Image 1: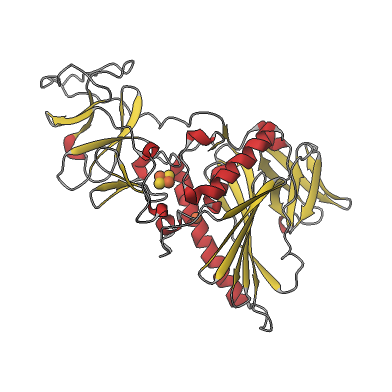
Image 2 (image 1 turned 60 degrees about the vertical axis):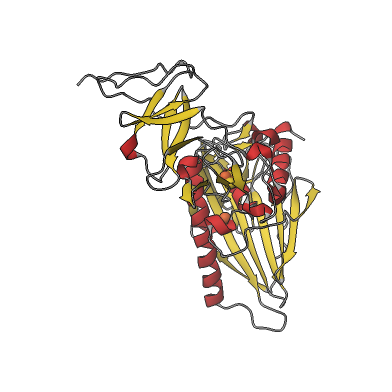
Length: 412
Ligand code: FES
Ligand SMILES: [Fe+2]
């Protein structure tokens, strides 16, 4: 049988065969039509096919990773739901009385039809009718990668990242007299521990050790250090998480680590989806976000480019701090250095090895869930133009992150 490519990919008017109808069920299928990427899906078993643009407007997550829930398409990151017309009918973080902003609606194609055993998609209004039954099986366009965000992004190879201290290894990985190769900003550096201290080849502006980590600054740093008062405080006991890597940029992982609205969806933590954004205070080189409620106070301190200290103080006087230091290795690789620091309530014995092991296990599991999502994002970097995404009340920390990193890029 002769295969016939139906419409040209050079235009987006007309009808495009995108998938065999029998192959479209309640799992979104990425397809291409008119040079753009879409997903097609049935919002109930056996229902008509619906078509949506390839990315969620909130954080641009590919909707190929979405699921169908109660007849709606649900984004995997924060659970926004869309009906068959693309209307955003639920933003869980806004609570049951919240209404989605108009820009949350998806720009669906003009029409989608099933005919001759195929799903046909018309991206734009067209006066042309559906083609008659083809004599040969149509050949759909390959689904292109979802379009990158509009405007500038911060990926792992951005030149502005030269002017910062980056974590590149745990101190204990570099034994006396030993050497170690590390990746940073798309380059390989060889670290050596000599009698005079740690050196780097090729030479860097600086190499130092702090918090049990080796740091390297390719060029003179412009930012501020992340203060970690728990380090050196004898009430705190530390445990490192196993080594981990993200298959995406450090900035998008930092965004996820600061984000609260994803917790019920990515981590299924059983928490209420409705969240307040917290109180954000801008500081030199970063910001602090504070949230209180449920018998605890959570304080997240962020310093550019990718350093985060998240401390949870409970009403009983105990504390738990998660320290996350991100190493932008390559465009699609970020190494995660993370540890927990635990303090018992006043007067109680220090946390024991079992307490530390349990906290490390819990944090490592949550990090794994975040890394799974990062692998699905297909993100070239974090959008720095606030108009490239859609922000709601729960995104206060994410907005502060984008402003901080935009300042870094601008050399402010
Ligand atoms: S709901 Fe889609 S990215 Fe947030
Ligand atoms: Fe998370």
